[in-house]
Length: 408
Image (cartoon, rainbow, N blue to C red):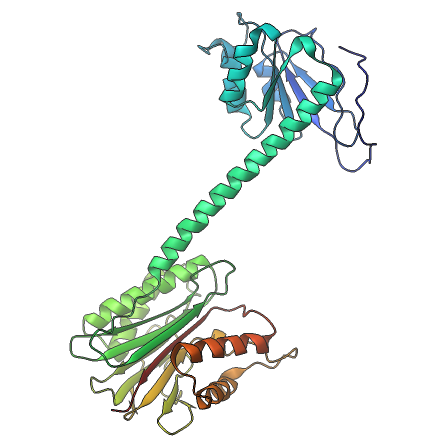
């Protein structure tokens, strides 16, 4: 119906391109009335006599396909001719343009096929006999918005499913400490630097072997992405297996370095590590450091202090034949040992460039312990204060592990 009255719409605001509609119909003389978008701009119309022509005209700027479902008859279009049902052309269009809005036009006498077209996947249908500019303009706008909403909902659903799957996977990869039979108390906190992630490049674990020795470790793979997180999980699992196999100290770290060298994506990847093995009576421990910050030890009646670092070796993956000496530590009867990754000490203090550092962290923990905080309360308060000093969330992964023993 050419020359139909333009529907009342908001004035053209001239912002951005208008809509483009692709009309597919085997009658080259068929016409549709002028259409107008939300801003009063005239809709651009392209016409194709069959699906072969439509394929050439279906460019990225087409917003809606208007399919004229003429009565079934022979055509020269191999795609439509090959369809066995009366909606063969629609099925072909939906396969050809899965991300585009689709409107179908039928005679009013073909209402059943029009309704079936919507069930198949079209956004709406129109009766060709009652078509005018206002109806068509409104239908095109509705179809475009509905398709956009459908695509957005599908993407949101897929995103949620991926997030839930990743969350289940990452949660399953977090360690479960194995300390049955030990009188040591365990607490840990983990905050990945990646937004909305559960797992980062930091890793930790704690197990008790059959001889009564408690083994603890904490480490950090350089970087913050999912590849680093996966490598951290591999190293943690390898550490647990090697520990139960009886390896300790330099022998264990040398084997872990071989695992790292075979599993890392490139030769620039390295990992820092701190391991502690606590004797069955809980009074002594062996410490190995591989480029990692030294733990914080607090004995009964004294403030926490950093254990010596100079006995450590390089990070795993830096030197092919490195050695990692095991340093003996006297713990005493009652003590608390905090192991952590560098994300805890590299946050800023205030708005300047000054960082908290190990000494600042030790002073912070000492104040909280003097106030009577222990276990998970101590870790939660420490992490919150470090974040507050930083002026917001820490960008690096943070893992903290706390083992303590009452007077024995």
